[in-house]
Length: 189
Image 1 (cartoon, rainbow, N blue to C red):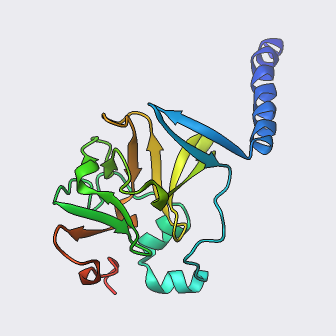
Image 2 (image 1 turned 90 degrees about the vertical axis):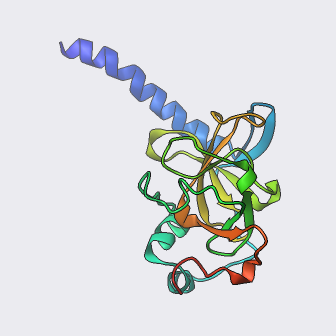
């Protein structure tokens, strides 16, 4: 019985140690998803246009926003304000008000989080390889402040085949025809 256990477990440990080495030697990869190409890096940049101290972020964001945007947390599914929100307008970063997604690209993925098939401007999004929780995913960050938004998957609808699965607390919303200055910081302050 001991020999059987060793025979079954040994390949797992060998694979796990090889995977660790690959992570350290691949600083950047190009990801191809349904004819869309973007580059994802192993770690996000640290020199964002908007940089604040941890204390400043804590003062400006609600505890939930801080946990998701700054600590890469995830809100519980089906609890977010924008999960089933289909008003016309656009979605902005709750931390810095950068325009991220249009309501024209939002769809109901039945996953519990707001889903979009494309960003409003690809330059507003940064893609980072996420190895957390024993998975390899592509994390989505705000390119202006580095706030964690969610992840992108290749199981979305046409025309892109992508599903940007975004935490509601990472977003604010501006109604069609409204100016962004009329938007509160989305944290009650």
